[in-house]
Image: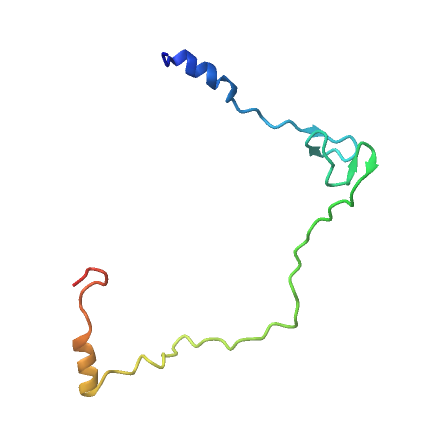
Length: 106
């Protein structure tokens, strides 16, 4: 049996994508899928089937007033900025520190 281009294309002729159909609801005026419940009103074919979906509103949670933080001083120094390694212990720590990049294996 030959596997020709025309046989392949004939088989793939059913693979085409079809766009989604939608209709405009008569009562709400919003778009919905055909033969489906209108989610904004909860109606289907003129009958109330389900409760309409309520819009979710995001409100910030209020637990009380926000605490006021002290303003940072522009010229404040860090506590660890003045610390230096002194003595033999500091020199040993500096000497044993690896100077190579991590992950290189050496």
